[in-house]
Image (cartoon, rainbow, N blue to C red; front, side, top):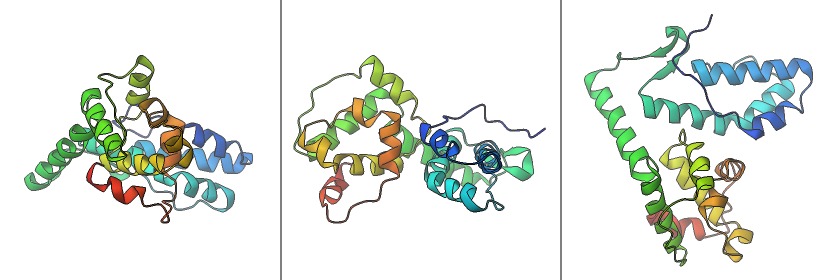
Length: 206
């Protein structure tokens, strides 16, 4: 049995979509690689063909989920230690890890309240007012589904989200669109379009 301290992870629709495009052999290779990485931190080295292509298409999301789990819990997934390494860092390293969790997670989205403050600041940099004082029930649920992502993930996703002409021109820069898991993952993995300068303008806020 492969032991791990991790109890679960969000299985994104994009994982399911690419999985369904594979033949049975590649499906097995892809899903085993996904589970081993998420639970044990094992990097796949034997993937070939379409299974490898499927992995490459999702690796940013997978790595972000693993990093988010490790940052929040201090548990470093490691295949040679039964799935985890805990308490083996030097005192200095432990302080740095704790500081990263506090500085990145709590400052941006550790709570719904701090996320809302951050989101309001982002909208203000776009010249958009935002007076909402709390998230809707739908937004709270969607927010909870993204807890494994880091500050940098949120920054990247918002830059690409707010650079989308459709959402910007139609004044749809709201949490209900940004926090929707499919949207968040899409913009997190999107290529930044350098011809758009909006991302640079948002640098101070996000």
